[in-house]
Amino acid sequence: MLRLTTLVNGAREIRPLEDGAWFIGRGPQCRIRLDFPDVSERHALLTVSRNTATIKDLRSANGTYVNGEPLTDEVQLGGGDVVQIGESLLRVSDADEEECAAADADEGGETAAAEAVPTAESEETAVYTPDPLRELRRSVQEQIQRELLKRLDMKRLTLSGVDQAELEAKARETISQIVNEVLANGRLPAEIDPGRLEEDIFNEAMRLGPLEELLADDTVSEIMVNGPEKVYVERHGKLQLADCQFMDDASVMSVIERIVAPLGRRIDESQPYVDARLPDGSRVNAIVPPLALTGPTLTIRKFSKKSLTAEDFVRFGTWTPNAAEFMKLCVHLRKNIV
Image 1 (spheres, rainbow, N blue to C red):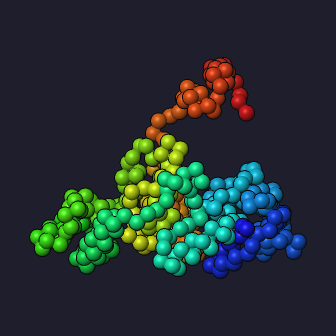
Image 2 (cartoon, rainbow, N blue to C red; image 1 turned 120 degrees about the vertical axis):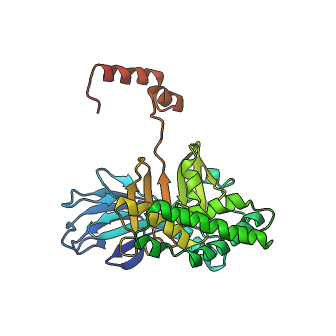
Image 3 (cartoon, helix red, strand yellow; image 1 turned 90 degrees about the horizontal axis):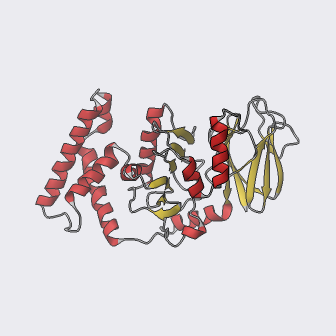
């Protein structure tokens, strides 16, 4: 069964959603009542049927927004979509999936999230199985990361006016010192490459952690972070579990803050979601507690560096060759296209 999470002025309410029509507004006849001046009497219509939900704006005065974009037509809501009506935030999710995720977390198992669940087709390739070497790397990285924070107060240096280049140089120097000390004491396992370890710790401390390599990988079209150990990527239309991890929820949250801060946005309990674009055009969607029930999650839809041509659309099967020729002719003749 689907359920609706409503966040109003920091207060969260969760209710089950039965099949049927759910009017949203401040009128007394609305099943989802938001009694605020910026909400219309009948503001929007949420339709639930067979475990799917769609939402439609009912010509409201102030509009309905999905992931920060104004709603112009009826759309189907996914698990990660956030609806904004006035100052209220709403999210539809699958109750069964979130209960399973919570049970896994309680048992100390994997951290699951309903915000970007892999498709059934990709389930075989996206199953998480613990890797002893990965766990060892993670343990060593956590210890060095803690030592780095003891020796280098990032926040104090930032507030003191140290520029980014100097801060990064200090961080690299300190990380190198710590790793060399660990090597000299014979405490670094032979399976771990010191150079790669230094780079991973630097990215975690100063940049976007394990996302750095994924963002630079042109074969990756989408990145989905559903928890520290659940980083998925889409390559050539197929979802895969990436060979990287965050240390914990705090690391995921730190990366989300680094992404949204340069965009002039903030994300916290009072504003628990952000939908924005990176300078290269990539789209970012982040959700944090209390709206996200299983920890901070992040989705990055990368902007293609290559402009698609009519031939590409034919190759993908989007257009037939005749349709492509027709569209080219319309453009050359400067015809309006609806």
